[in-house]
Length: 605
Image 1 (cartoon, rainbow, N blue to C red):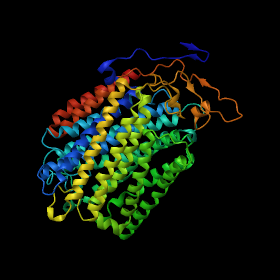
Image 2: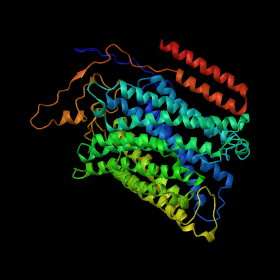
Image 3: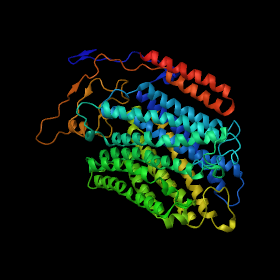
Image 4: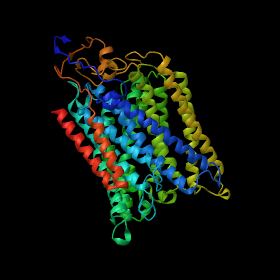
């Protein structure tokens, strides 16, 4: 096909069926793989949560033994952080960022595929532990010395360390891909301060991942060396330090909170203006607030460690930093409210979830400020008050934003609208269930109930609030079931969405639903922060915006897929099991990795 701008290089016929998904390097396919896999782990993590709530729903319960509870507790936290929330946000980013910036794909398509397969390999390594000697049982935070061989004699923590390593490597290379794509592949005219808010938050998140994940990687390597080679990094009696683990872990762990919440902020910043029919209030302030959060996120890690005996000066510094970081977060909240104020609100499901996000995140934020106050933290540290806080932030925050994003962008991804009636039931039950589940935990924590316990006596008086919390958890599960019914029903008989069902403002709404493999037949030229709105609604008295397009990649073929990323990931998967059971198995695993790398480079050149 040719135009006046030159030849448009449409892709060659692609493989279909399972071969397509095993070899794909298209960013949209990889985004779907990320989202599908992450949602599957969400369901597993949810079942683990329900199991814990059943155990705690009544005093002196014996549904789970202490060891079984510790395994479920550890895998629930690990799953929700590393295998659900972060990968699902990366899946949104993979699908949407190239469309939003006017690109045809990510900068490194095969590296993008490798990042997904490494995530899957890490998840399979972690969950194979249940069948191969027992899952990790020392908590998702894996504090030393609980994770050393003396206290965790099974291979559970080895599976944990190597699973986290594989997933972490995938996340790191994926983050580098986002940075290169966003900084180098924007459409003509899309300056940095014209990028959509979601793209900005993904860019900041990618930098956070590049600088934070290596700290966790080092921690996991040191733990594996201590467990299997006699190292003494975390042995206080032999010159090591148990606090070394905590400093390294939380130097990753607190930026990780913003790795999970900044893309959620970006999702809310796209939904709110679209459903209030107003441009986002304070665009630049939102951008700079996100950058400030990313920077300050590396300065607050030790507020998780107020009770370990740091100096008063250190406690004061980290307490102050923790309060300062609330300022840019508050800027975002005020900007969203200002955007909604006076707008022509379209109260559809995406806006309902966005409003729910704002309300619940404010509650979580206020409790976070209290935990940043050292005397208060000393009283409620390691109680259910902390559990309530981080679930209000991460479930009330990230998960509500993700479901808002699903209702907003699934019509673009699938071409079908979801049922608004079922969506409202989903939102209502999830909002009520969220508060029933986690607000009682604040009261339980203030009443002295410690976290990480598998049972309690009737005399302690915690049974009623725990029962309410368990009822709330099953209410949330019901809401998720309604979402699944809505999704699968809509795929068969849902109303066709069209290209622009929400009157969108950014470039992804200019293409068909679902988008074609090549995204844009012509790369658009951008002249404002709201390119599609300006095209549809030119300012009064001005000429209609011209549909100016140029062919940027004339003659270039799109990436056609490759088996090599999955082969490299398979080799690392085999090597991980060899590291646990027999170093002779490491040799064929490494051989497969080198075979994949050689094939990768031969294919490229």
